[in-house]
Amino acid sequence: MKKTIFEVKDGEQLFAAKVSGDCWKMPKTTIRKQVPGKYYFTDKRIVFLASGLIGTESVSWEIEMKDIDTVKTCTTPPFFPFGILITMKNGDKYKLSILKRKKYFEWISQYVS
Image 1 (cartoon, rainbow, N blue to C red):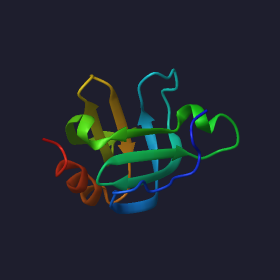
Image 2 (image 1 turned 90 degrees about the vertical axis):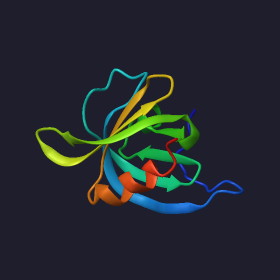
Image 3 (image 1 turned 135 degrees about the vertical axis):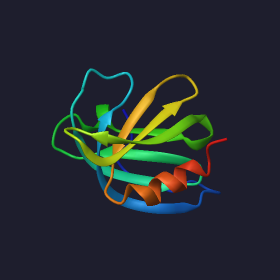
Image 4 (image 1 turned 120 degrees about the vertical axis):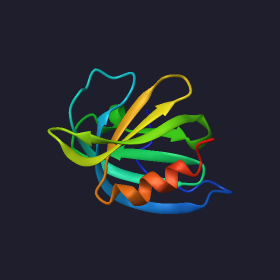
């Protein structure tokens, strides 16, 4: 079972917490639609905790900053300029949708080597 509560780990610096947004794409799931939730950004990881009544654990996730290969801005359906596409070193992709994405895009970008 995945965690449904966010906790800062020892040695982590919290950048932003409880940022409302949606996840449009994530690996290892058959869900291909908008999943609402909250994002948490630290200098070590990004955590997405889906909100809703049923099955939120299965669409909640966390990724390590060190495992990110590329990050770029994108649109979300239908053509909104809120997206951030993260490609991991193993090829997995995550599409985040966040208002004021520039702030979060710049934050993530500084950790991509």
